[in-house]
Length: 107
Length: 118
Image 1: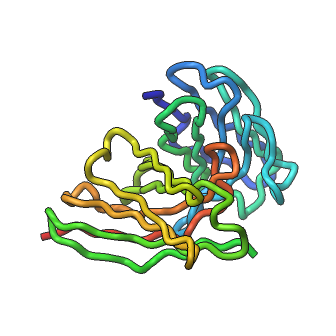
Image 2 (image 1 turned 45 degrees about the vertical axis):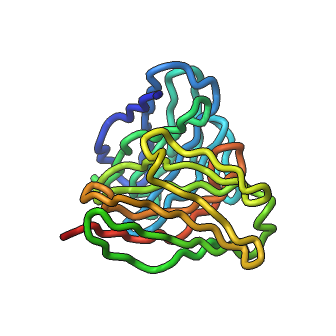
């Protein structure tokens, strides 16, 4: 099974600043990668699919990049509602696997 | 509006079974695969398997083969996930999620907390 490794585990950033989250796959997943945001007590919310395509209704400050084994989620100017946990998920190879998450907290 | 509404929290003893439901509304239930994903307290997400509500076809993660059963009732747009021979490490929030990918998920149920404790 493909192991997805996210870094850092916790990221402290001030509102208005840029946040960069990383996700690495143990083998190539092509561009078959999604990013989700999860707030406490809520279900995950789809942000990005196909590594770089924003889901419906997702603000332009969220962007995804990468292919193969290295991926990045960038939030260009953090808003208060962006502080949450972010997960990556590969859907290239069965079984589909998630990273352990990056907690984005207010600095 | 698209919704997935799950059944309420459950408490079971080790060795028992639990069946969680997921009712879809606002879209054609048979038009999208449905997946089940779980999240242990404070942990990441773990995928259990998927079901094709149209055909009833299923695919389970190997880890859960023999313990998980996914079914559906198309007349009431509801999917079910049953997990048997429960252990304490099955304690988790169980989510159903709609597949719009293939294999990524745009709509999730609110989650069902399953607690396994003696």
